[in-house]
Each structure stands twice: as C-alpha cells, then as structure tokens.
Length: 377
Ligand SMILES: *Cc1c(COP(=O)(O)O)cnc(C)c1O
Image (cartoon, rainbow, N blue to C red; front, side, top):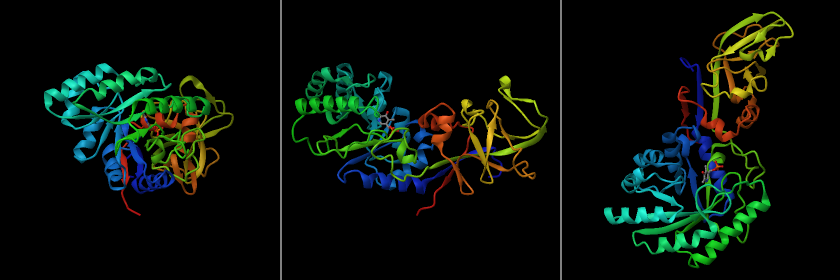
C-alpha cells in the first residue's frame, strides 16, 4: 500500500458471505434489518450499504438523520429506520427523506401528527418499548397510552414495534424483558398482526429468535454482519462469520537501545536486555487503543511482536529483538487481521485495549484510508 502509513482493508465479499450465513440461520420469513450506524461501524457507509442492498437486506437502521440521508442518496425505495430520538429541528428532514422514526412518547407522536398535517404525508413509525434498557422507548407500563395515541393519529401509521436488551448475557433479565414486550403486544396490538408489521429486538448478542413461542419476525444486526462476534455466548456466536475489516500500518524506524532504557510516555516499560525497538506508523490517532500498550502484539511477516510502552497518538512501539535482522523501514505491520497464516482478531485487540469491539470499530479514525476489496465470489 504505497503512500499509506496506516490503512483499513474492507473485504465486501466477506460482508456478503456473513449476511448470507446469518440469514440462513434465522427463520426464512424473518426480515433482516441491517444496522449501519456510525459509518457502518467504521467500514464506510456508502460501499457497505450499497453492497448490502445487492445482497438481500430488507431494511436499514441508522442512528440519526444525517446517516439516513447518506443511504437515501443511494436508493429512494429503501425503508430506513432511525433508531435514535429525533431533535425537533430534524423533523422536516424526516418527511423529506421518507424515514421511519422510532417513537417513545406522546409528545413525539403529537409532533409527527402535526408534521403529517402540514406536509400532507403519512408518516410510518415504529414504537420503541422500554422493557428494561432504561434508555429510549416508552416505559412498558405506559406503552398502552402511547399506542392508543398512535392509533388515534390519522397522519401516522404504526408499522412495527421494537425493544432492546440491556444485558443479553443475563438470561433471566432478558426473559423478563421479552415477557414484558410480549404482554404489550398481546394487550394492545391486533391479532393477527397486519401484513408487513414487524416485531424486533434481537441483535448480534441476543439472538434467541428460534424460540417457538417467539413474537418476533425480524432481527437488527450490526456487529455480526461485519464478522465480529460479541463477547458473550449468543445463539449465533458459533456461526463462522469472517471479519470484514483488517488494519495495517508500517514499520517506520528500527533502532537499538541499551538494557534498562525506559520506553515511551510514563516510562511504563523498561528494557531488561539490549533491544531492537520498532516504531509503527500508527497510534491511537489511527485505531490502536491507548490501553493496549504493554498488552497486545502486532504481526510482521506472520510473526508476533509485543507492543511495548504506552501507545502514543501517531506512533506505537514494538520489541523486535527476537526477530530477524533485516526488518526495516516500510515493512507491513498488521494490528487487526491476518498475515502469513497468523492472525490477530479485532476482539483480542479490543480486550487488550480495555474496550469493546463496537467502540474499537468506531475509533478507526478519518486519517485511516479504507481500501475496498470489491471482488465478488
Ligand atoms: C446498535 C444497535 C443494534 C445493533 O447491535 P449489534 O450488537 O451491533 O448487532 C440493534 N439495535 C439497536 C437499538 C442499536 O442501537
């Protein structure tokens, strides 16, 4: 990769294959809501969403209007669900871009009803129910009022209901959340549900949709489609999804230092022998988590070398003392992904960096060019 100090390689064929694998393992009539918020988890929304459009997703979900507008520019017909609450100043864009908001409150419904009257357009909404997440959504015990309000607003059409799990690894609490959700649905919604009405909760961590009594008919998948598995044992945790993103930089300097020298800010590492230290051309200003200093390793020619000392904004240090003598300027260093048959999973780097895979993907900065492998299988 000439001219690049660090870069992320994004393999779209793998994205496509992951999507296929996930689809094959959920019931056939389920809708697949592809979550592509935060620039498609750092993968770049335009190339990923356009490949996903060709590979069979049913809806897109994003966090906000700005992200929705990027998808809307690519295709006018795609249903786009906005997961986060809207600012009132964004209401006009909602109608212009033909988006579906997730509503939580009577106030929002009044706002959207007014908006519908002003614009003469029907607004489709999904109702978010707070069954225990304590974030957005109508608290489940208050949800009946909100649903009635939607049904009595002729400018709005209820097209789906959703909830979100707070602690998917806790089966008992998740069961409680499911039961609360189920109660709201059976008490307030027509049975059978209208055609194309969708009921969704499960994401990458909490796929329990195969349960027989399930009310669900859609999933909202983010992380897993990018080939990264959540750090808990979920129903789909064993699917052989493959990481879509890998991250690389280069060796920019190699130098010899005497024993007892301290390395980098805070002097957190001391050399216990005469050592050869390499400087990698990337730091936390690219994607390497601050806290993986003295914890993680990097690959050169498929060999693993420890990251030593604190990671800095632009440079990260590795100990090359046990490596061959000819390691030199320009050598490719892999921090996430495969190299010569060896690999560092993103999950491992996240763990060493005291962070979670979601955050690590969001911290691949603008400085890092994304290189797309677009070949089809
Ligand atoms: C981000 C998000 C998802 C996707 O979660 P993953 O764990 O990445 O699959 C689903 N639903 C909501 C409400 C979200 O905010």
